[in-house]
Amino acid sequence: MFTRITGDQKRYVEDGNFEIMDDCKMSEAKNKLSSYCKVDEDLVHLPTFYEEMFTGDPNKTVYELTHPVKKPCVRKVKIEAAALKDQANQYASLHPDKTLDDLIEYLQRFYNRDLKEYIPIIKSALCSGLNKASI
Image (cartoon, rainbow, N blue to C red; front, side, top):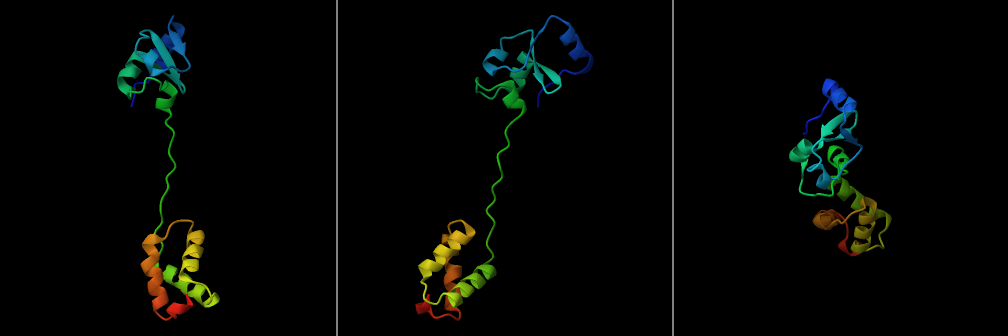
């Protein structure tokens, strides 16, 4: 977190003879003793901001540090074994001429990911009631 200047202090800086910047690199912030930078509706004192927020990258700007880019959350949802077995059985009954490789390729396209960890489940579905040679 960093110290924001608001209210009376903000008005004092705005009315005074202080430099107010829209944005500033951290490499410049340390040495600008009487300078301030806008952050949303508030101000920050650059040397103080430098002490509080410097990450080691001198090319980062005040804006980048106060408005970090949120990385998208990517979750890998676990495929339920029962649903996968049902799908394998349906595929086998609809396509008796297909091989196990065809089934795995179909399921990888369907789920849009690698299914190596699910191969034992797929094989167990085919062994329990289906002719191995048909798939």
